[in-house]
Image (cartoon, rainbow, N blue to C red):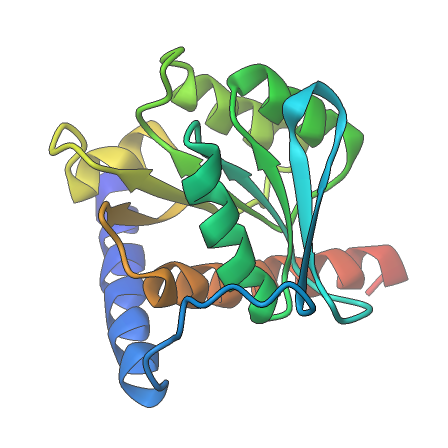
Length: 187
């Protein structure tokens, strides 16, 4: 049953990413210190935020390669999203306990091998959180990821284009943020 339900999500996500990628100009990955701020948080984690006030989408990026995570956070930050970085499952658990997130970008090959546990914990903390899985290996097929992680909304193969990640996070994160505001306002 979940495979049947998951297939439309995959098709919709692929179509949406392709359509958004055609509309946007190619992104420049030049680092602009004035537009992006990175500050260390406890336990080696980090928080990245755009230079704008009131970003709607809070994103947790779980990636063991801190440099790659910072690049992703910088790109998402330029799109107006606030990102918190976690390099280990324990940092991810602490971040998920500390604040609610509207989206989770999760590397599936964490050295500790706990990516599925992080996804389960994120879903426990926020049953509506959309999860964007990132993998460099062919172990996870498109349909398998949707069976293993019920909240999976997309699977990106590394190396990936940051524009594709941004399109998925923007689409599903904005929906999650809007739903959270509706719940908070009682509507």
